[in-house]
Image 1: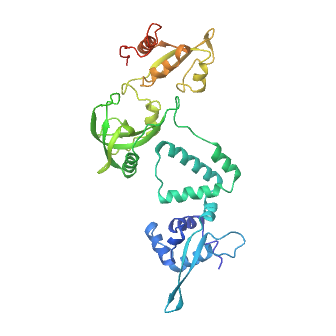
Image 2: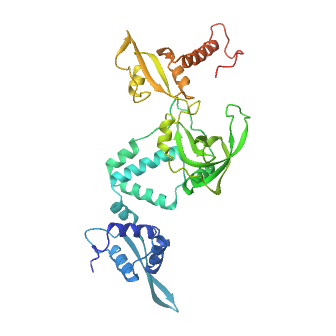
Length: 371
């Protein structure tokens, strides 16, 4: 009987989840039916399972190789060969070719590479099988291989500093708490500027994990009404997923939170309104603001304010990264306003100039820099 009309894509996908890809874990039809019931409920009849597996394991078809391998069962009893129930396992390369296109395989492999760079997670057995299937598909395409070997996403900015080190078990516990809707307990270094800084015990309800510039943050809340806060994973120790259910925030949206924090730049004062930043930018540095604007509403990058200079304006929050960014532009950017931001930049530049004064030896004692 030709069962091609009986085995649709959804049914094939379910068989791919029921059956193992390893010969030593091959299953009888009865075991397949039982496993189907455990995973999905309402399994096909034993006769239907038998027919499906016989069709999928057929080796005499010209239109496709078998999608399932069949192991004929035999046993020796009292010197005689006795037939045993046949067992079945997936032919992974063939199933991958049916279920995963080259485009999907490429995107899965590239996305996994970026995910590994940020979180370095351990793959589940099912995830490892899926990734293995994707790679199997990619071996058959030179174009896909070129993409896989020729595309890289660098998660760290700046001068190429290494990513912050965090304990892998801490990441496991954080992801467990997030996925299971449970609270996360940890010891946290609150004064990170001090090597011997104060450590407190916290218990938060995680709402998300965010990776940025070599660091991973747990976004969480401690109570029913407090604002979500980011907690750096590398400043945590003794991390444990608790049994208590997490505080529910059904209206919380992680993407909105990232946008409100200006791409996770940590506003210095929670709830403070944005300020109008006015910059006088030299023509040799204006490309920084054309190629990567401060905001979508930024203005002034295409018309010169005066010979060789542009007046760039944007409403931005005052974050912990704002003054260091402006100072990093050196003599190519002058802060025209607001006065408070200009004054802080002036203090930074003055302190830096003191460190490099012509009459000062390298490493000589200096006053503490402005914060």
